[in-house]
Amino acid sequence: MQQLNELQTNTLAKIHQAQTLQDLEALRLDILGKSGALTALLKGLSTLSGEERSKQGAALNVVKQAIMDALTHKKEILESEALEQQLAKERIDVSLSPNPEEKGGIHPTNKTMEELIHLFLQMGFSVAEGPDIEDDFNNFTALNIPLDHPARQDHDTFYLKGEVNGNPGVLRTHTSPVQIRTMTTQKPPIRIISPGHAFRADYDMTHTPMFHQIEGLVIDRHIHMGHLKHTVLHFLRAYFGLENLSVRFRPSFFPFTEPSAEMDIQCDRSKGSLKLGEGTDWLEVGGGGMVHPNVLRNCGIDPAEYQGFAFGFGLERLTMLKHGIPDLRDFFEADTRWLKHYGFDTFDIPSALYAAKGDK
Ligand code: PHE
Image 1 (cartoon, rainbow, N blue to C red):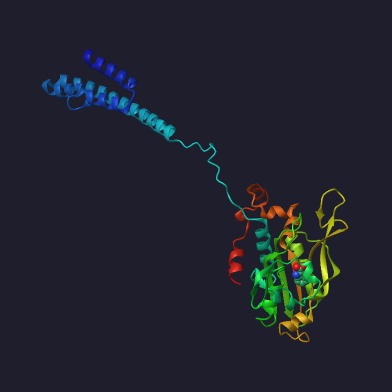
Image 2: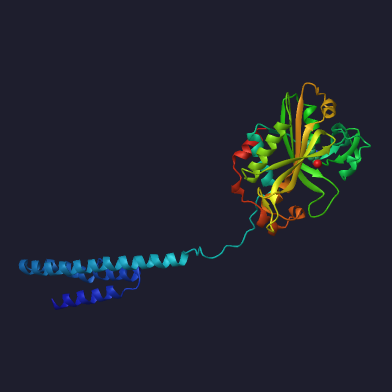
């Protein structure tokens, strides 16, 4: 009995002290394995007489149970400790900053272009495109700007060395040649917008040799200035997100429209900063008018039957005004700090836009 008590006490102490699962398993084998101490005692029972055997047997079972319980308990503790250690070793520290990867964004010009395309598609326009390299005829002559016309000088044209379609080649100075390309290949009714590059030899805070315009053209029966005014008012209010923005049509001159107007939006400069849609000042944003009968005739459209309006806006100008960007030149410097500041997250653009653009 004495021996059994000692065995129990010692074994429980050793179990308590075991440091690893291996130690514990070694202990278990020592006591309960095939040649373990307790196993030997249990085997010895067969040599005892009936009463002695059941007394000793009961005592042995109590000890065995106590040892097994202790082993199970200790095993759970060691296992959870091992798991903790493993987790600590394999832990990923999410608070550590990752290697900073430069993340791109949408350029403000592209953002404006997508927004305007979206707006005009909703109004029933489709997108038309033309090449950056134009011939002098589409860029000027067909638009009622003959060779000796002073308006040619205003455009600071980049002339190309070679000819295009048998005419002097130019980098298009505006998107208006797309009007000609559309009217010579499509029959009215026509309702297009044409976003794209324009080129002029000019460089300062508000002029760069390359910039973007968006052209609009509607040709149908009974079209008048009211349609132009409504269209421009609607798109400017929607683009700037200003429901009550006032738009002013100021009499002007373009060789390809008659009458012609320059379009201004309402603003307030009195408080030191520019505030759109308030106050009594005006800011020019684009030009437009009724398509000149000569232009219609040049494209084989009878001005007695069809009329139309056209307009052109500078995309960067609209962008600068909406987002408070002071210098046009920065748009094309490819400075990632500028792009990070003024660029847009890719998720900002409704995915529907891509589908809509592809439908054209
Ligand atoms: N093409 C003109 C420009 O670049 C803008 C314009 C377009 C004016 C259409 C009238 C009609 O200044």
